[in-house]
Image (cartoon, rainbow, N blue to C red; front, side, top):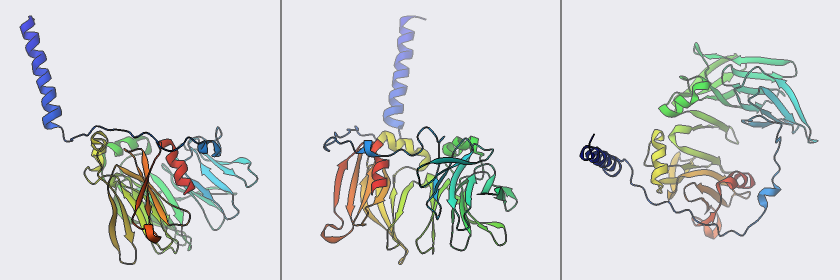
Length: 331
């Protein structure tokens, strides 16, 4: 191959790449400038206690029973509990590496979501399968669970299509195969309340138990929290890209996110903040006079004031992503 031919091939390749990047690309990225922190150095993270460090193998969730004992399920099949005196106990072992959500029941048992086996009741007398099938179909991916005052168990099924070891296929497909289900302890029957959910995940009950909240991972309703008056505040990561194109939002690094409020009395949803940089975690202050919402691409959190003369005003605080979990727990 002569020099002229090689040059022609290289030129054609360069033109093809340039055409793909500058003409066919679905995004129009900005330069991402990460701010430097203006917060004085501190050692707050050094004050955090790491529960079970070195003892727990990838815990997914926690539950606290009526006596104050904390339970968690780990990927090595153990139900481990933390007693009030600070001692850990490997309480029960289940032959599974897919233990996810847990909840403590009024009767003193623990209910565990086993992504492969379904809904399990764990007590001093052993392990019982409460629900392994619904409407004749095997429960493939039980994810999170909570008990209501009447003993009913509400739980999410992340996907009805893929087994847990193929969860990444659900991520790539980004379709709506999830469900919200209810187990009735009196009839021992399981029913589907909601279908076609986008990777149904966390489940929570309102304080007066007149409604449930279930998170859809792929719909980018990213995080949610309830205030004392029943209002739901939640983040919307992006208004531009569908979940299966979330990586384009990453590359573009623009501000398409929102902070929203759902009013249960009027059943209306309103936008409190717009143009957020991939809005993520949401937390309420202890006295509920402000919200904190995290902006991923800007490496910062925003305070949104809810009360007094500062209502509707915002205040930015640069913060490193490693601090976000700590901040959410403190507020």
